[in-house]
Image 1 (tube, rainbow, N blue to C red):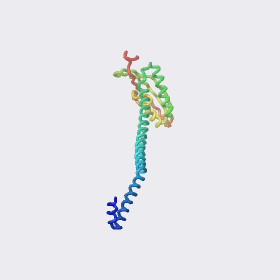
Image 2: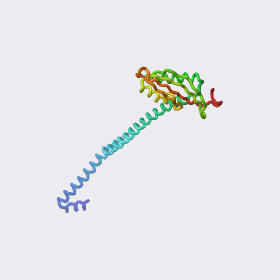
Image 3: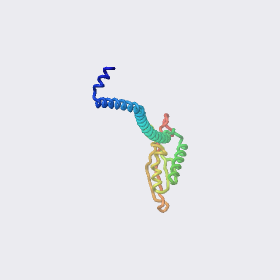
Image 4: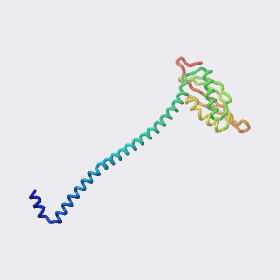
Length: 193
């Protein structure tokens, strides 16, 4: 220690002052770093947590949208399958069921179902084609919407042919007659006759 004091006494007062200031500055800098280290670490953690929460929120929103879309697709598929996968029914039940479905759809569209008569039946591959003569009356656009809704109410196994439209009620309404063919899976024994 005496040697250090002897060496320091040989230094000029300016150099000694500069070294003292340098030592004081280094001590203050280290103290400042020690004081700021904890808040800086907390800030970095908060920023990382905020980014993680934003990513989770974006992912949750995307999952909610996908869930809504999947739910809508499932409802559409259930409705379509409900209409398409009905078991073959006797002729009278089929006619009553068809009349009820068409009448409900016509009521929703604001048109009147005027007739429904069974027509020819025939075998087409593994399906039985059951035809009906259908008559309806109403305004032109509601009739068109009613025709477009056949796939929703009757399924994809229904087709429309022999479509005829004519003016009725002195041109205020349109009369529609069509042939509707439904295709039902045949029973293993060849189907009903």
